[in-house]
Image (cartoon, rainbow, N blue to C red; front, side, top):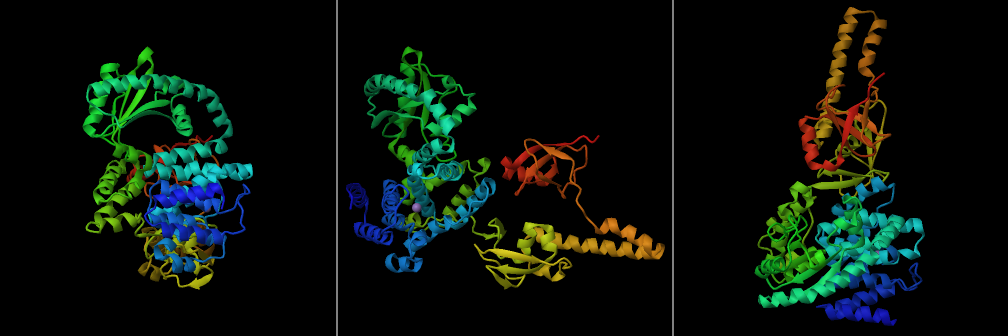
Length: 585
Ligand code: MN
């Protein structure tokens, strides 16, 4: 075994409470991947080894670290999940399987892919540890991006910035987020990265030098006030996070005060506030820049006191003050709580996560809190080990043959699925195939199934469907189909009485045929998009309207005061776009 490998493995073993399990998992993985190489030319085992190493850095349990060693075994070697179960038990097999499932999603155009991946991420990752493994797996893959073809590297990098980093951020894992983003940035946006580096590299160095001078001054004052800091140093802002911030500040570097910030860690909350007092006595604070994230933590759980002062030479400098516990949380987020001996810590942490969740649209975090409520009385160990993100408890996710994910309530049938795809598919739905086999239209679908609907032109909805469909959408569409038929029937009878046959045809035609005229609406920043007028409020030319982007390049137009729309807006504010009527000439 190479020196580097030996060293990594040794460190993991020293960290672990179960060295035997660690060794066993390593040896199993090494044997399974024998002969396989990474693009870098190294033996494949280096990748699972690093994945496990990052997991152990997060101080996760031996079970999770072992699963990290084994995470690519099912996909890339002949080993089956049954074998893992036999060798390592149910728990590890479950984690390895979870990671494998996450890797199975196909890439089909970036927009659709992201939406799918997000959903599946949460649906499949029933256990938060699966996500943590996936994040560590990704972190190592990013470090070897330079060996991949540029196009592939770019895709992986963008996907990291779009999906993995935000998830990591929401779990409060700032250090992980920063590492993921800064590893992805140069490959996702090489020009912007180079540009930024040119802009700030010297500044970073210069700021660090300056803070090195400030450090002893602060320390002296703190000691005078009998505050003994546990740690006092400075940290540079991550590049990607700086890049994003600069975009919000007109690319004006002089407006960014936390390029390099001074960080002070003190023993308790009282000392945090005292420290701010000391700093304000030394230097004048900038108005409106004192931020008390201890009293009101950020939505992702972050706690600290921030203040910005006119420091020596009038230089604007940011200070961040926190306790060791807050510091650990700020770095490791949710993972920081795995090893807490009592439940209290994790519960309090999740409470803070959910405090501001709904207003930010983080519904899944709110659900996490709900889960926590339901697990009262469970032993802390069990609770920590199996904290499940089952916020999709009552939902199932099934696939179209094209790989799109359809999100349905539990117990939904192929008819619900058909209507979820399109009204016409529902109305003419004749047969359903699940994973290639024909099943009854009333048979409940299961999570992860691939469903294909076979339509027949003359097929019409049956009243019987109303007895088993689960979605309101399907129910509504089936009923309205019957209503329409009755309407046509009546017209037909009246027409028959009043007119000769030729006229009947003319009269019936506009009712029967329903070609949708494309609506004359334009959407801000969108072209080539299919536009439907919402049935709930039926907007007419001249009404004040807004657009709601659904999926697959479709948009629904609502009146601005439509009650339905208001609900949608609350839930998916990011999908709302400005809409105006096109002027007809
Ligand atoms: Mn991997």
